Length: 594
Image (tube, rainbow, N blue to C red; front, side, top):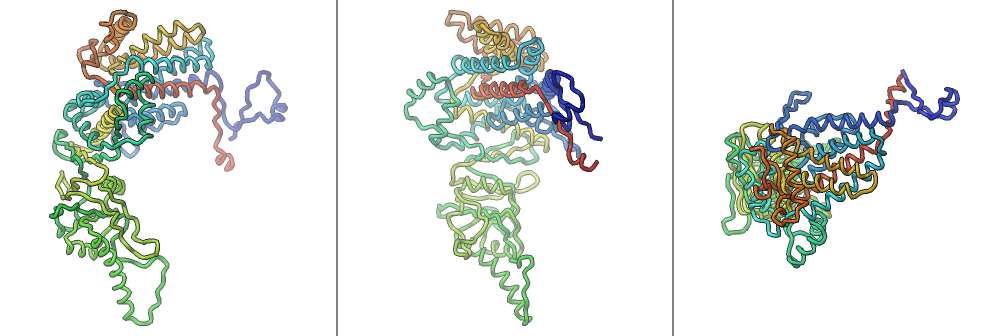
C-alpha cells in the first residue's frame, strides 16, 4: 500500500487545495523537537556502547557477526566500524571515530563520548527555549577558546624529544589495550620502529606541522631558536606488521631496516639463503604477472595443416616463458617474488640458476617491499616498441635474503634494504584474536609516537586537559554578556564527561574525584603564586583513586590528538544539532511493483 503524507502548514487546508499545491511527499516526515530527540537518543546509544571501554581499566567488547566470526576489542573505531548502524545521526558518530582514527590514530573512544555529551546538553538547552543557532555559535566560541587555552597554557614543547617522553606517550596509548601489562616492552618496540623509518620532510610537510603545532608566538620562538633546522617525517606505511601464531607476545621482535614477507620458496631445490659475496647488493625482482607456460588467448584459433607444426607451437609457447625468465635472470635478479603463479617448467630454470622464487605473494606487501628496497613492482615486460624487456632499474636491492621458519610456516626475511627505509614488526601470540588486538593496539601507539615526533608537543593525559578546560571555560562564560553564556557553561560541563567516565570505569567515586580535580585546577588558574603553576598538569591516578601530576607521572599524549578530538567532536555535535527536519522517502521500486 502507498501512503502519502501531507506537509504541515500553519492553517489546515482541505485535501483538494493541498493536492492542487502539490504538497504531497511519498514517504514520512519528522520535524522539530521529535527529530532532535531521535538523533540525540541514537547518538547516546552509540556512545554508551563504547563508554565502558575508555581508559586504562576499560573493558573489552565481543562482537559476533552473522556467520559467527568473533572480534574481541576495546578500540572505539573498530567497535563502531563493526556495528551495522542504520540511524543516519548515529552514522555521523561512526564516521567521526573513523576520521579520528585516520587523522590521529588514537582517542577514537573519547571523541565519540564528548560529541554525544555535547549533543545531550545541546538538546536540553533547546528544550529550555534556547535557539539551536545560539547553541551552535556558543559551541564554536567555546571550541575556539578551548583550543587557544590548550595551545597557550597546556602544551609542553619538547624541542629534542627524548625516548623517555615518546615511550611514556606510547605507554599511555596502549595502557587500555591487551598489551598494557607489557607496555614497557611494546612501547620501546613502537618507538624504535617509528624512528627507524625517519625521512627528511618536505616544505609542505613542515607547513603542516606548523599548522598542527603550538600558538603562533610560541611557534615563532621555537622556530627562531631552531633556525633552519631540518625537520623529519615518519611514514607509518613503511612499517610492516606481520602476525605469526605461537610463542609468547614478549617474543615479538623488530627487524630494523629489514622486511619480512609472508611467503616461502616455491621449490625445495632453491637455496634458503642468498647474499652477495663481493659486497654488491642482492637484487630482488617484484612481479605482478604469471610465470607460467604461455597460452593462447581466449577465442584465438590456429588452423594447422601439418601435424608437425603443433609440436613447434607447443615448443614456442614454452620458449616465450623461457625467454622472459632469462631476461629477468640476465638483469641480475637473485630473488624473484610474484603475486601470481609459477609452474614447474619455470621453476626448473630458477632452481638451475640458484634463485629464490616465491609465488602468491600479497600485492600490498610487494608494494611496501618495492618502496623499501628502491625497486618497482613490474606488471608487464612489454616496452614502447612492443618488444619484451626487463628494466634493471625495477630491481630492488638488499644485503641478504633468508627463509626463516616462524610458527607453523616459513617467511622470507629481507635484511639491509637499500631504499627509503623500512622495518617489520613480527608479532607473536597465542591465537588470531589476540594477534589482531595486538596489531590494533600497536597501530594506535605507532600513530601517537609519529604525531609526537612530528609536532614536538605534548599535553598531560588522565583527564587533566579536560578538567583545566572546564574550569577555564566556566570563567570565560562569565565574561560573555549574551545568552551564549549558558551554552559555553554547558560546554565546560560536557568536557568533564571524560574524567567522570575514567573514574567510573576504574570503580572509583567519580563525583568526589572530579570535584577534587576541578578544585585543584581552579586554584592553579586563579592563584598568583608561581609555585601553583604546575597544578594545571594534575590529573587522575586511576589505580590508587587519587590526583597526581600526570606530566611527572608520564601520562602524556600528543597535543594534536587533544585539539583534533575537540574540533571533530564539536563539529559532529553541531552537524546533528542543525537538523530540524527528516524526510524518509519510500522505495520507488516497491511502488512500481504494486
